[in-house]
Amino acid sequence: MVLALFIKTFLVQAFSIPSDSMQNTLQRGDRVLVDKLTPWFGSTPERGEVVVFEDPGGWLGDSPSSGGFGAAVQDALSTIGLMPSSEDKDLIKRVIAVGGDTVECHKGGPVLVNGEAVDESDYLYPGNSACDDRPFGPIEVPEGRLWVMGDHRQDSLDSRYHQNLAGQGTVSEDDVVGRAVVIAWPVTRWGTLPVPGSFDALAGPAAVGAPGAVALVGAVPLVLWRRRLAASAAGRIDMRGPAG
Image (spheres, rainbow, N blue to C red):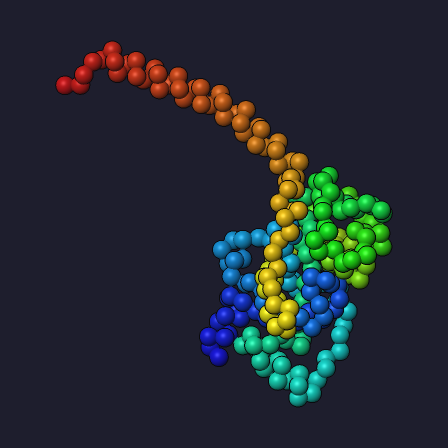
């Protein structure tokens, strides 16, 4: 029990999928294992990852407790990480944009991150559009926050639907419990949850290039100045001749 409690707190925790918002990637009733270790080493969520996060406030309505002996047993087992808690108010979505990104989606078009179209064919629910039910943006995601969306786009109350709340629909990285990495149950659906390759091709925020260019321009004179100092010092040493 002590080992299980340690694993749940620092390493891996089980979560149950309560809705259809992440179909077909995740089905209602799936049990996923969430990696809680990497954030301890300073890792932050990246585009394309499926993450579990605490309700930022107002995303989930008040849900009545099921009560009874079954709920009590489930809560007892959830304490040591053997089952998901019946009281947890957590959500699971896919990270579409991170701090510094500009994200938008217009009716009939794809999701755009920093002006580039995201190929969502690998995970978007069959027959769904990218955002026809709720177009948005452009929105600049604040640093330290995330823009998240469900894979079953027309059945997901995600960032698009909470822009009137604090954070304007974004989720704080501090609210992220961890990254969902494995479907553990049922056995017939076992599999990993990798990041789609389409996210690897996306460029970073446009503003990122400016400081780098400025730094390069500033570095060139500094390097030349140092070289002149080194050459001057070498000349002085040569003129003095060997020491002693």
